[in-house]
Image (cartoon, rainbow, N blue to C red; front, side, top):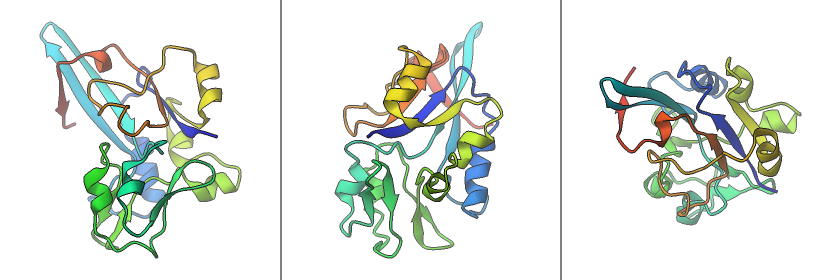
Amino acid sequence: MSLGFYVDLQRCIGCRTCQVACKDRRDLQSAGPRPRRVDSFECGTYPDVSLFHLALSCNHCDEPACVAGCPTAALHKADDGTVQYDADRCVVCRNCMTVCPYGAPQHDEDANLIAKCDACKALRDAGRNPVCVDACPMRAIEFGELDELRAAHGGDLTSELPVLPSADVTHPNLLLRPSAGALREDFREVTL
């Protein structure tokens, strides 16, 4: 079983509703960690310019660097294939933050713990979607079995973009429908 996220970059408008919903569900302060984050990028020079937004969280990788790098097994692969965090085992060494190429584990200074996406395990156990999925007004995010997501959304999906680390490192369970701008090499992150 390979559960993961599908994100349609052609539909994402960068509104950050998914990011806010995730922080709200986890009762995280606005300036604190962002387990689901939306970053914006511009490409090109006038008149050939474009802008794209990328909503990312933990990619629940097949070979997660954070799990391999955690000395206490606080980060572990659950039976459903997601990467879960056990705060009781965590010594907050932050090694997971250092080794994750996607920057998914983040330090919550208020709680002195690691914050990361758990794919809303409690909601999924209750038969519901992760909060980011239901919050997205553009329906650009889905979560489920990767084979089912591929079948539903076609063959032009990827987990490789110039703005992301190579998927060969951790084999992320992430399917992206890229926008034209997301495929360009001349990207620059912008703050909106």
